[in-house]
Length: 496
Image (cartoon, rainbow, N blue to C red; front, side):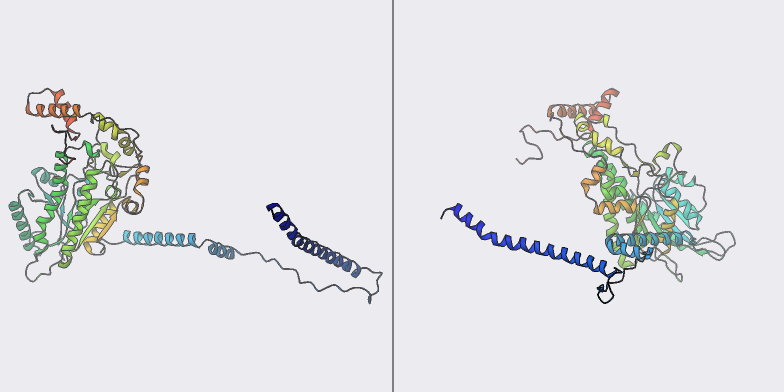
C-alpha cells in the first residue's frame, strides 16, 4: 500500500468523527434555539387575556434580581492591598523607617546636652581633639564642645598650631603640645598631661578645687586629598600622603594608649572610662570611584585600623566609635572664596590634565573631566549644601555621654546613602553614573621619548642652575610613572 492510499484511508476513518462532532454542535444549537422559542411563547401566553386561567401556562420561578451595593473606600483599599502585597510591604517598611528617623531626630533635638559641672560651676570633663587646628571641622567641634561645658585640648605639633588655638580666644580651649615625630618627647608630654589630670584645679580663686576627668579622645585626620589618576602620582607624593594622612593619626592614637589604658584618677576618686572617636570621610571610600586613589586608600586603611583598635580595647572596656562623615555646610568656618566647596573644606585643587604627559591625557583625560563634573566629585555632593554641623555636634556628644553605643556612626549628607550604594550597587553602574566611559583607542607606546624625558629629568635635578622652563618641563615629566626597558630587552614585569 502506497503512502497516498494510507493518507486516503486516514481521511475516510476521520469522517465519522467529524460527522459526530458537527452533528452534536448542530443538535445543541437547535436545542438552545427551541428552548428560547418555548420560553418566549410561554411568556406571551401567560400574559394573554383571551386564554382561560386553567389553560394559561405558569411561568417558572426565577431568582430575584441581584441588588448592587456600592463598594466603600475601605473595601477598595483592602482589595488593592490584597492585589499588591509586595508593594504594600515595601511601603510599610519605608513608612516605618521614616517614622523611626523622624521620632529619633525630634527626640534628639529636644535633648539637653551639657557637660557635667561641679557645684560651684567649675568644669570637670576634658576632651582631647587630635586634629589640625586649621581644619574647619576641628574649629567647629572644639567651639561647640567648649560651649557645652567641656575643657578642650587640641593636639599641636608646631608653634603655628598653638598660635591657631590661641587665636580662638577661648580660655577653655587649650593647646596640647605633642611632637609625634619624637617618641621620647611625646611620652613626656603625655606624662605632663596625665599629671595635669591628676591634680586638682579651682575654677576661680578661693573656690573649692576639683579633679578633672578625661571623657574622650577624638581623632580627626587630615581631609586634604588630591584627585588624579594613579599613573600621574609620583612615588614621593604617595610617601608624603601615607606619612601625613595615615602614619601621623596612627602614631597619635598610639601615644595616647598608655593614658587611655591606665587609671589616671587620684586615689579616692571615681575613674571614668574615656572614649575614642575616629573620624573618616565615608563617601569616596564607600564607592571607591576612579581617580580617588589617595583618599580611598587612606580612609580604607584607617577604617581597618579602627576595627583592630576596637578589638584590642574592647576587653579593657574602652569603647571605640568610628564616625563616618558625609558632607557638611562649613559656611562661617571657611573663607568666602571656598564656600563653593562647602562640603569638603581644605580640599586640594584638582589635578590639571594639561600638565600630564600626552599618553596620560589620552588615556585618562576624558573620563577624568567627566568624573570631575559628575554629581559626586572630590568628596562632596554637587548642588547640595550639606548637613548642618549641629547634627555632627549632637552625634559626638551622644557618643561621649554614652547614649550612642554603636561602633559605627554615620552622620552627614550622603554618609548612609553612599554606604548602601557601595555595598549593593554594581561597580559598573556607579562608574557609568559618574561619567566613566570606555576608551576606544589607546596611544602608541613611545619608549624612546619616555627614556629621554627621564634622562633629562635626572640631568636637570643634578644641575641646580637650570632655567625655570626646564624645571617646569621636568616637573611635568616626572609626574608620570613609566617602566623603561633594560638593555637586554627585559623589564620588571617579565621574568628573565
